[in-house]
Length: 215
Length: 215
Image (tube, rainbow over all chains, first blue to last red):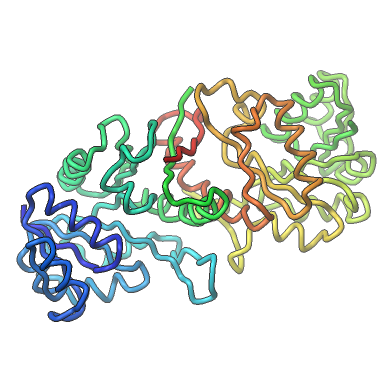
């Protein structure tokens, strides 16, 4: 599949590299066409890079892996016309570090960032997933033993199924892909970040994930 | 131990009943001395009931099991002098249902309810715990199979150890009592509630809990 990964940080590069390894045609999107990190990544992985708009425009599926506080600006740069009708996988977290660590989760009016993105780009098919774990676990769930989970939610069932297929290709078994229903489920997963960050500190590692145990 | 449980809802009665069963001298505290539910509970369990102030005044350890949005008022009614020097176990969640379901988590200024309580009652020794699961699991963790966890945090190490002892007596093994450090860890556990509520809906049961899996 032709996939655009927007965001050249650790998360974006990790996802883009995994997608390349899985045989997808990946373009890493960044603010400028000559972004140094994106250029280096593309050369190393025999893949493409370009502006947010160029990347999204040529893609069938778009991954938002930009920082949550700049995600809206990045998607505006990508352009509504380049997102329309496409599955838009949002893996970002709206973490506001403006007052230092720990950051606050920015959820104006109680809505998640994913819902804000869906409102701003009503023709995109937004699916929230993967934002509740470190990037190495996202693409290699076997790295953490046991029945830990990945959450997925979105308003478009077909888009959610397409993203679930991607998760399966990353190594996530069906039983551990937890469907939270419509996109408002992202409120819960985005607000999980303060606990995640706290645990990263107390456990001394980011290599962990949450499980759900039932009676 | 002489324990006051403030709050006559399902959580308060469940905790109070467990503490009676464990041999503690329990007083269930409510707004009025003749609260119908508290009177009935006390008669049934051969235990005591009384106002928030009477309950807290006679206790060595106080449990806040009131609804999070009325917790501050209940603790003010209990009285700072009746809380001073005592371990105050906060199991409540500041869920604001004023705009319907799902509720928002009320964390003014980014601080947790537990921290607000500690600020308002600086001589109490506040420990946050048990707020991330349904009340039946709180007092009977074996009800849910597997390595699910309970979080504990607080600024007073001795108070936290006393609460950890209580958790052990409820059946929580040490390896599943997760110390999140100081009381600001409650920001993470209180913000877990939107995901918990969402999962209750999608799983169709409250009989579940979270686990933490490490690489």
